[in-house]
Amino acid sequence: MISAIEYAIVNLGSTATLRASTPALDFLPPAAWYDLDSDEAHKSMASRVLLRSGSPIPAFASNVVIQYFDLGQCEVVRLSEIDTTLDISALEQSVVLDHTVDLDGYLCVDDGTYRTGGFDLRVRRAQLAYPTAQGNSTLAIFTATTSESAWDSTQSEITEMETRWLQKTTSRTSGGI
Image (tube, rainbow, N blue to C red; front, top):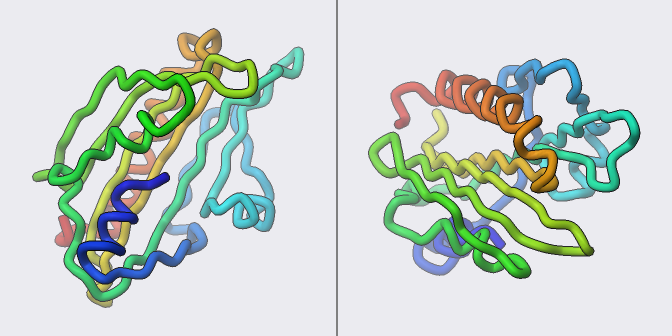
C-alpha cells in the first residue's frame, strides 16, 4: 500500500504510472549491493531493485526498492498532509518507530518493523513528491528492507544509498521542491 498514491487518485483525480529509472537517477551502491535485472525489477513493480550479497547466503536478502510514479497533471502531493506511516502500519505485526518530514513537507521518511513469513524485518521508506519539467506530479520512493538482525550491519549502507538517491532525485528536480 502506498498512501500517497491512494491520496492522489482519490483526492486529485490522478493516475499512477510506474516509470523506469534512468541513468541520470541511478547512483552507485556500496560494494556489497548489486542491481537486480531491470526487467525483473519492473515485474516486481519497481523502477530499480538493489540486493545485498552475503556469505553465507542469508535467509532474507536485504534489499532496496526504488519506485518513480508519474501521477499526471495534478497538484504535487504535500506528503506532510497525509499519514505516510500507514504504509508501514498496514504491514503484518508492524510497529512504526519514527516519522520525519523535510523539504517543506514534500519529503517524508518512516521507519518501522514488521513480521512476515517467519522473518522479523526492519523497513525504512523515504518518499519525495515533486513536479517534473513537463508539469506532471511525481512520487519517488526509496524503500529499504532488511532482517532486524542485519539492521546494525546494513544501516550505514542504507543511509548512504538513501542520501545518494535523494541527491540524484533532487538534482534532477531542482526548482521543483
